[in-house]
Image (cartoon, rainbow, N blue to C red; front, side):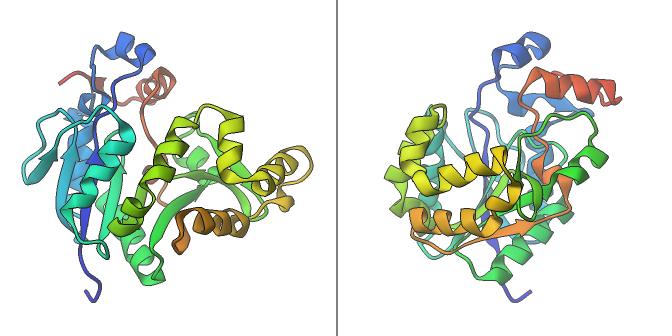
Amino acid sequence: MNSPLVTAVVLAGGKTKPDLLALTGVSNRALLQIEGETMLARVVHALQESAWVEKVYVVGDVTPPDGCGSLPDTGDFVENVLQATSLVADEQYLLYATADTPFLTSQAVADFVSRALRSGAEMCYPIIPLELCAQRFPNMPRTALSLREGTFTGGNLLLIRAGVVRRQADLLRRAFSARKSVWALAKILGASIILRVVLAKLVSPKLLSVEHIKRRVEQLMGATAQEIVTDYVEIGVDIDRAEHLKVLVESGYRVGQP
C-alpha cells in the first residue's frame, strides 16, 4: 500500500427526527439497531475493516465501539465537523462518515478511499447512479439530481484534507445555516450555478454537468475536488426518516432498540 492511511470521523451527534423517534423510541438514531447491531457499530466496523483507516473517532454523546476515540457532541453539526480537524495536521486527510449508513461495507470504504487518494484531489465525494440504488434498495426514497452524465444521488462519505476544512470554517457555517433557504443558498453558490440547476430541471439535464458543479465547489472551497462515481450503493443509504425505516421493515430487515 503506497498511500497513507487516513483518520476516520463518524458523525453520531444527530438526534432522531420526531417521526422516527415515535416509531423506535431511540433518541439518537446512531443507536438504532439493524439486524441486531447498532447503525453506529456497523459503520465503525466497515471503516476499521477497510485496511485504509488508521484510527476511528466517534463524535457524539454515545459510547464509542471498541477501538475508537471519542469527541463530544457540541450540539452543532458544523462545529462537530470542525473539532475533528484538531486530530491531524493540515495536509493529512480526514474521512468523514455519518453514523446512519448501516449498510456501509469495508469494500465500499476501501474502493472510495483508494480511488480518492489516487486522484490527488484535496477533497473527494462519492456520487451513485440512481438506477443502481433502485435495483439494490427498491422503494427507498433518495434525493437525486439529473445531470448531463446521468441521474445521481450523493453518498455519505467525504475525504478531505484537514487544512481545507479549517480554512473554510466560515463558509461551512454559512452554508449550513442557509441549507433550508433557497435564496440564502443561491447567494453562496452564485447565480450562474443556480440558473443551470433550474434550467436543467425545467428544460434539459444536459444544461448541467458534473464538471459545472465540481468547478463551483473548487471555487468556493479554494481546493481541488474530485467526484468518485461508485457502484457501491450502500454508501448512499442513510436511515434518518420514518419512511426509510418502513422500507427496511417491509423488506424483511430486523429493526429495533439497543
